[in-house]
Amino acid sequence: MDKITLYYFNVGDRVTNARGENVKLLLEDAGLNHNYIRLPRGEVWAAKKAQLIDEGFLSPTLPYIEIGDKKYGKAIPIMQYISAKLGNKYHGSDAEEDHYLAYVAEVTTEWYECLRTSFFGTDQDKEHHTKNITPHYIDLFEKFYAKHNGPYVLGDNITYPDFLIYHLLDDDLALCRLAGSPNLQKFVETFGNRPNIKKYFATLPKLSSK
Ligand SMILES: N[C@@H](CCC(=O)N[C@@H](CS)C(=O)NCC(=O)O)C(=O)O
Image (cartoon, rainbow, N blue to C red):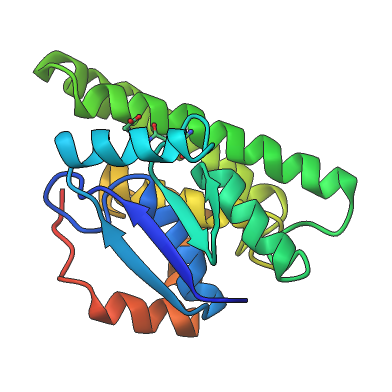
């Protein structure tokens, strides 16, 4: 594939926070040549967004990627597109599996939206999230990973929802609080030992714990 440029904001105090990292992880794992450009919020993004709309890129949001003169938007569709360009490297092997993966990806979106609400919410929202929402999703994804005996959500092969789930476990709980979730632990360990992911993680500032 031609060189890819990924665009996203900086969110909070960690370079890996939020949606852009889902795409970044997949690009790293696939070993694809790419640049990662962080756009400032406020006027710079507003001007860029207006320009993108003028150019015919409707409903532009971050993350998006650029390949040559083409732009591709929205985190999950970007990941699906890259997988498709790589011969369905991160897809299932038939329509049944692909529906299942899209279903799992949708559940990650539901979790992400809760996390986003709490991130921008009051202390009460944050407390509700930590006490109720996070344990609910840990429990749920522990079951998803048990279903096909892991280590990945579909079994032996990594697929695009694995990147979404790994990143949620990192964004929401900094990969902590998994003591009672052996399947998630096995997944996190296996994911972190993928050669390109391991190399990438070594370049990151040390993770803060929650
Ligand atoms: N469904 C989209 C949502 C993208 C989204 O809302 N991105 C936010 C940043 S996390 C954004 O671009 N906000 C600025 C804007 O909407 O103009 C995705 O997953 O990529």
